[in-house]
Length: 358
Ligand SMILES: CSC[C@@H](O)[C@@H](O)C(=O)COP(=O)(O)O
Image (cartoon, rainbow, N blue to C red; front, side):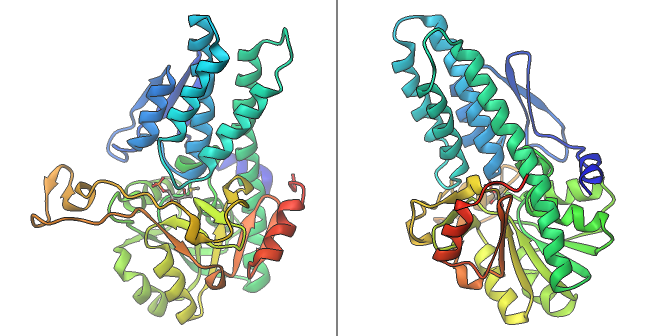
């Protein structure tokens, strides 16, 4: 299946070439395909904050390249570049709070820096580390896609209709996706009749990005308002809800795009299985439960305006952009290290002791 999956890798959002980080601007998709080149850590931090690049794994990969750009500038400045690079680590770490992949990637870059031998070429070592982070995410996507398909097969030969939320595809990762990677693979295996894509208010990752990615590949996709999800589960033969994650805690609680929690509650009510697909870089064993996850709140204007035009009354708006789904509403967490069914603290700890499967 691996070759067929690789052949399905068409879109990419992150390109490291000619000493610059090139990002496909997700703020203007699907209407414009505009690439922006970044040559500084400050530029990359702003790209993450403003969501030129988004999605937990893609944010981590971009931050890793941001450190390469920062190191190049600091070394050129001379002096104690190693100490001044700390400022760039802080800047990038401050760009968004919820997706732990950002901190995981920055820690990995920092560890690499700490392990530099005297006389080693620091820039070459950091660049190789960032590329390895990027490549390993791509590999993880492939492994998770295969595991997710096996899981669907195990429970139900056929996933007639799948419901998904936000965008978890090529635009959000270094490969072809986490949840959307499983959905793609299941489609290739002839197991998907239709994908229902929540529009994902207020930023519209579902209608602008997921629907675009799936339609480009000829995968039957129907867009729905987020509030239609329960009705769709009840009436359209949905067998699985499949979503990604921004942070998974030691007990298996999952932070993901706002609206995921209500999907899990509705899935349980309707007997629809609920699958979370995320690389192990999304798992934060330092946090005991989802109560400890910092939830990003963005500008209320994202709710009150559409395309820069005001659509809401002149009131205060509350705009948390993630929520936490408790572990006991989750049927399975699929990672590149393996699958955890009915997650709990013991099973998550066991998973994290395993080696990657590829
Ligand atoms: C593979 S992406 C998984 C999650 O990062 C995704 O579901 C999500 O919540 C993205 O949020 P975003 O605010 O668009 O960065």
